[in-house]
Image (cartoon, rainbow, N blue to C red; front, side, top):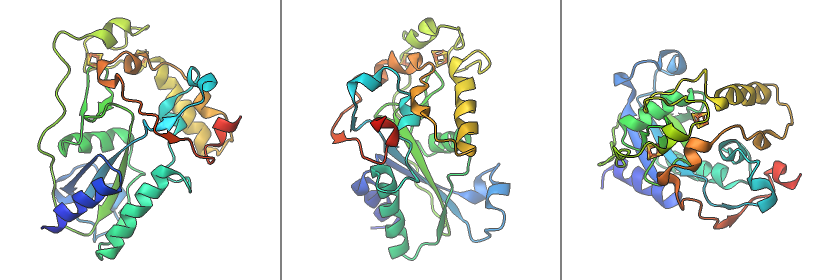
Length: 239
Ligand code: SF4
Ligand code: SF4
């Protein structure tokens, strides 16, 4: 079995749902990020789905799910442990790496589309086969390798325009395009980022904003599995 296949299989065994990798020599826009790391030859992206937590009912209606469970760098959380396990495996194989979580989200998502990990839908959110409740983990490595998945998830059906019709501010007028200036969530994302940079201990996940185009999408139906109790490190859940 090739090393790429071994890495792929290990990623899925650890708990990621998809794995992909591309050679960095082909990619534009990574210049400043990988400058100073001449050994970098490839970028790996793995999909971690966070639709696995039992939620306290009284909090659900106020919750911004994407912000609530982001815990790649919070110790003793499942997301952190999953990434740590994968890094330990890279180390055990003698692969040099650094994480690439400083890349902006749109760049990561576009690379994940190239690796056929997932696709954008008409609401301009990134989805894998398992829906949109996903975080993408990124590493740069010294291995020159490429792994593209076989199939993208199916596209939005032509007849579906639920997200477009129900957007309260008509930000998705045509589908596959979003007017960020209109989207209620855009401002909120900026506020989230600013507050995080200032390390403000704030009840961030409870500023829900608007998630309507995700909530009514049939590709998110029955995607919340509720198989694992939330972990104590999610301090916001205790408040
Ligand atoms: S998050 Fe809300 S406002 Fe923004 S595009 Fe989706 S439905 Fe429209
Ligand atoms: S609601 Fe329909 S059109 Fe909108 S993203 Fe979901 S499947 Fe696509």
